[in-house]
Length: 155
Image (cartoon, rainbow, N blue to C red; front, side, top):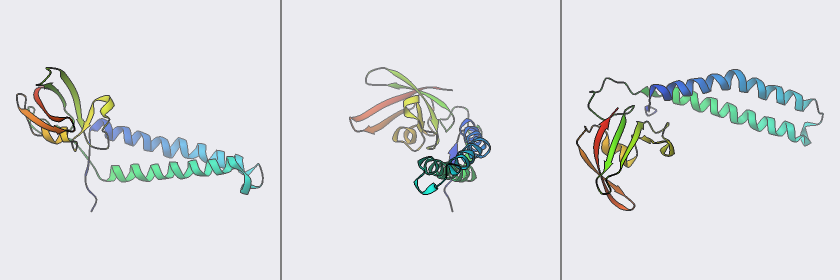
C-alpha cells in the first residue's frame, strides 16, 4: 500500500494543473516534433528525432509521477484546531538566541521549498512544531547545535 502524500489545497491544484497541461499541451507539442523529425528521413542518425523521443519519455514519466502523487494525496484540511500548527498553516518563529523572527509555511514533503520558506512536515523543524501552539518553545537539533524557537504566530 502506498504511503499518503500530504498536500495543501494549493499544492494539489498546482499538480492537477501541471498534469492537465502535460496531457493536453506538451504531449501534442512533442508528438508534432517527432512527426517533423521523422520527415527529415533516416531516424537512426537524426538528433532532432532523438531529442523529441527523449522529451516524450520525460513528459510521459512526469505524467505517471503526478498521477501517482495525486492518487495517493491527502489534502491537509482545516479541520484541525485553529490554534495548532499543522500542514497548510503559516508559522512565525522567534529564534530565542538572536531574537530574529522567521515565517514559514508548513507543507507536505512534495511541496517543500526551503528557499521560498516552505518547509516540510517531515523536516526536523516541521516535525518539532507539528501539533504545537503559540507560546510553545521547541528545540531543533541542527548541524550547528541546538536551535531554540518560540512559536509566536499562526496564520
